[in-house]
Image (tube, rainbow, N blue to C red; front, side, top):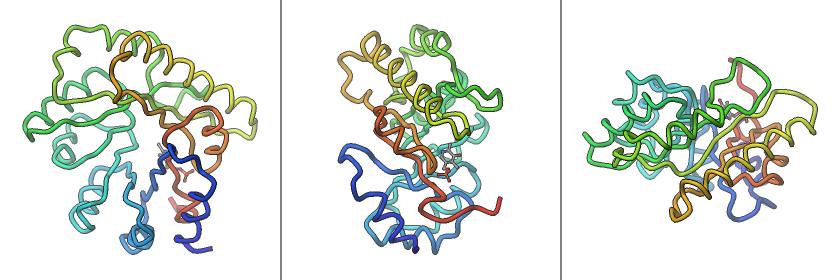
Length: 222
Ligand SMILES: *Cc1c(COP(=O)(O)O)cnc(C)c1O
């Protein structure tokens, strides 16, 4: 099937409040434009250099999301235009995002990445680390970032129950953080969870944002 058909099929039947981030990493501009022609505007990349190049070459009304591990020394390259940083996993990165956003006279939306998988290779914060950041006085002075929710990646496994439990864990913790830290902040509303292989489970468990790559653009070679 074509990129356009893939995207249309995924959108069909998706709850209205669930946004799709079309993960276009490693894919050429022609592929992105095919998706864009269906009216889709949200794309995700995980390499700063690739993202900057695509941002320069492609229509300016695309909303770019950074979905990978972001190094602090590269924040300045995307700070002028990035819409959402999905995987903030340290206070140091948050501090850098705030200072670079300030230089650009804008506010950058961020999600804190929570470690929910049983794999040690995936980045992310645990419950205590997230609470520590939100309780820290310095965080309260970050006026140029907005934490709009949490993000997580489930274990890469065929065990659907395990995936379900991991997403449930993230949703439960999101509710707790919302209650304790963001009760009056309507912007704290996103739960970014679910990829090509597990997005249906993620939506059942309360995802508001699914990051889908191969199911739209086809398998990646690398
Ligand atoms: C690559 C990637 C995706 C998309 O993966 P698919 O399985 O191709 O849908 C989603 N989230 C993150 C963080 C990724 O790096």
